[in-house]
Amino acid sequence: MPIRPPARSLLYLVLGFFALAAIAPHAVAESRNIGHRGYEIAAPENTLVGIQLAFDTGAEGVEIDLNRTIDGNIVVIHDGTVDRTTNGTGAVGSLTVAQLKLLDAGSWFAPEFAGEQIPTLEEALALIKGQGVAVLDFKGFGWDGGARAPVATAISTTGIAASDVFVRSETYPHIVDLLTHVPGTRIIYVVWEPDNLSDALLMDMVDFGVAALAFHHGIDSADVSWVHSYGMEVYEGNVDNLTGWTKMIGLGVEWVDTRFVAELEEQLEGLPVDCADGIDNDGDGFTDFPADPGCASAGDSSERNSAVACDDGIDNDGDLLPDFANDPHCVSPIDANEAGPSPVPGLSPWAIAVLVSLLSGTAMRSVRARASPRDPITGDQ
Image 1 (cartoon, helix red, strand yellow):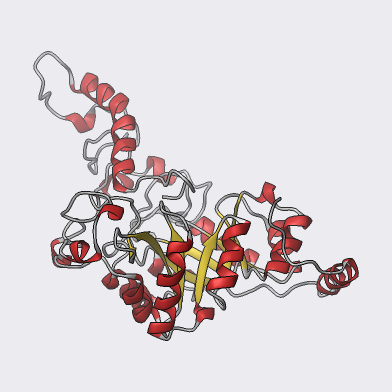
Image 2 (cartoon, helix red, strand yellow):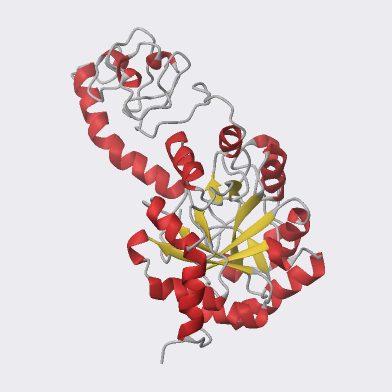
């Protein structure tokens, strides 16, 4: 038999629904800045230095990923192995916390972070306490009876307010277990797609006492209003450009998870868009550049054609050949100008560029996969 929320009378639900719906129009909520994996573009992900940097930059909370060691400790690391983000190898679940503490979790990102350690959940919560909220994302090991005591102990030992601890959940049994064994924490139920919304689900979430619903794709004003009408908040993950931030702020999404903490903070403070910030603000797949007057507009085509864009020091066309200022086709993968003299006898620069363009898509996908593998259970990266 499926687990259901505590029974409440139909009259109560009906009256509550119309009472909430009557409060219209709803005021647009203030969006808050959540650093993804701490501050993963500015410091090693899921480390204490990254968490602190996120708060110093203006974040009001951080999302951190959790895995469990062989001796039952909860540690802050995204992958099920230590290979990608430390100088060690092996599965997190096959190592003790003492063994993990010997690893360097910073040098892979930059030399100045050498010696940074994998934090325990207790260490992370102690740092977060008083600065903002913690959003806990349990990864490969999921949630079972063995996770209850370490999480509850970390909260009580550090003294962080339970209400400042959000826990992402995707199943009803997980919610029930959290409410029973780790009371007071705020639950974020992961819906993923707006198409999964229904009044029945929302009523269940209200009965469970869920604080927010998390989405990752395609929400609109109707979806947000629907969730708000039941008295819950909205959490949107992986919002990494101006187009997304503007949309979330305008919709009144309470929690916006991003890798670009500083840039989102600028938008929340009403500062002008920085076209030299090195990101794709308009989300059109082309990196912005300082002289681009429309870098915040998704319909802007100047990024594709401007010589200034070709002087931005990046590989705009993704053919693994460096662009340069007087190259009029730096956004074309078959552009021979970038290739220069042929390094391979018998092959023209154009032919090499064509070959590189055909191979680069596979190569870049492989690089991205190694850099941030997709979680096999949730699909999160």
